[in-house]
Length: 244
Picture 1: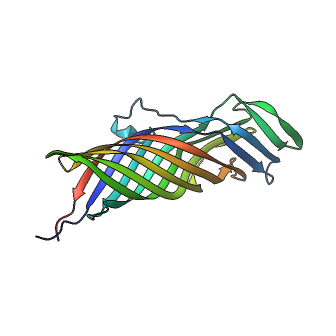
Picture 2 (picture 1 turned 90 degrees about the vertical axis):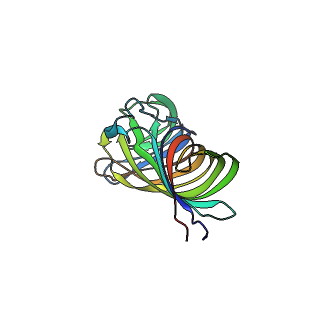
């Protein structure tokens, strides 16, 4: 008998997210006149799970989608393309230290930031497109089940969609390249009758936004970086490849 080749897999699931504080730089000296920084701005996610079970609303919540391949080798390694759709919203009506200049006026003080001043949200979303190296460690198995620990490390671009308003200049957003992300995760996978599995992951990521356009004319720019912690719960399908 020939050696069995590896297996393809696909996962779909949802997530919750937590973010560190972020220093955000806003700048437009072309069609407006501002150059200021938010120091230690707080942000939160938005799960939107009210109607996730509807076929026309599967992608409204914060979701995760993965396509991968496990090699049939001694090291139990795999490779994966992942799309993590998180949501990042700078919390409205918080007090933030604002420093810089706004239309010729200097500012360097704690300020109540209302949506009339600035609103920023990566909600369609804070998207991580990554290529991951995957390591599987089998822990236990029976005739019908197999439990494994799963570790991943990966990196890739932020292909995000940002909705913003700065000094009354609204931008409904569009998908484009915003920066880079690198992530590390660990979790558990329970295979069920070879073809199905459920999985949970806890993922930490470093996120660097360098190209977030602002304003209806997209002449403004926001830059910031932060860390995210993401908890995922996933359902998947295995497709073992035929033997050689």
